[in-house]
Length: 436
Image (cartoon, rainbow, N blue to C red; front, side):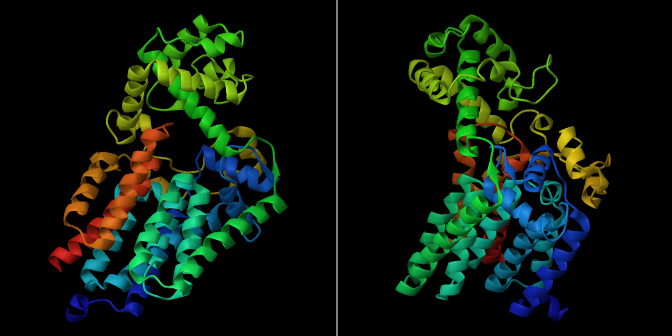
């Protein structure tokens, strides 16, 4: 019992994190691959970027496939980044063994974490990299700061909102600042940025405008439709100049819009498809991006009240208000869609993960724990009572979550995963300082 009460040293922390990493592999391999994951898999195998996902994500999958075909190695790397971060944090904060075991068990089996940690999407991998960058950022060792900024940059390249970790790392670095660690951190950013872009240029052919431009177009159309839905008198004068039937377009926007996700503007009941050539997106398919963005600016300036109503309605869904099932809380197993890509990569040859079987059992709870608003409350509490490290991580998570007010697209629970993970880690750090 005395051993269980003793604070962990570095070796014990590494052993504990490694043990839970093995358990995570047993639960999550080969990974839960949703529709987006299938597209990334297909992009990796065909060496083609279809302007739907960050190139860095497809690159990681491609490099993984060079070693082991399929999602298993990608998933293992995704989980390794999480449990390496956990090991570093345990070594830094040295909780008693009982508290460390409880903390690791929560990270392993807490329902929304269990349901999401093995999902092969940028939100999950990026969240793990953010936590790893945060865990590396300590002391005056230049190698650690190089690694922290390098890992943070990779997270940024997976999802641009994760770039918020870079100023947080700078704040963490400031008290320990010196010339060597400053140079190392800057080098970490440059090296990863150059290597990723060089590898993407060497291994892939681009077949679209890029994921940033596509995301901005989606967001703009979502905002236009949302504003029209809240105020049908919203003029679409820019679209009218392009000879679009704005009366019909207004009617379709009102019928197809939902604050739950932008997808409803192309996933129409009539089409039964998720291609962007149906629904409202189909009406605007050949309209240039500059026209869409100009109409977006006009709508926001001419109908600010309706525009804000739409944004508030969409953000309420993001933080978990409303029907959680409409926000896709579970993505178990390997998707059967899109069928051509699934067939091309042979996705159905891979057995589902144990976590998928657990999630699809009737006893698996989808409850209050899947709502981001619960974790936002915990993060705000950490800002009040937490230690410096806990407050820094909580500040990142809050900024990340509120970035979805500025960049609305959908309320899927996987978008809240970084906030849930950060809230649990920051809460544990704050609790340790208060009680242990």
